[in-house]
Length: 115
Image 1: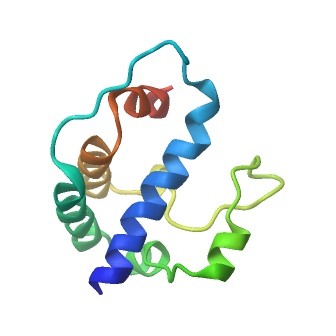
Image 2: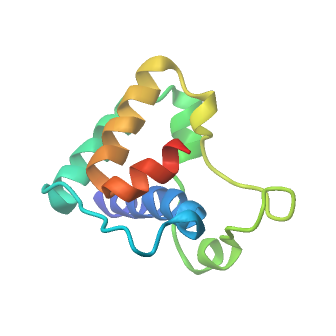
């Protein structure tokens, strides 16, 4: 469970940050709040706990070679996304997702996500 949770947290944050990387200003300094992987893992566990059973089933995915090969940051029309859409979350689930993102993303990543 811990290994799949760790993989979930990494894939979740990677998908969100890589999708927005192109818009980053190269001259802007991006700083992260202290906390590290342990805090992000705690927030990921909290996020999973508040998800509805259906959303949890969609969110928790096995990460391996096949999933890595299928991953894409191409537009959704060319490469459909898998996982839970942030727009489909309840207010409680959204708050938990935002807490996770705030621990895992830099200030620039959070700014890009908001855009």
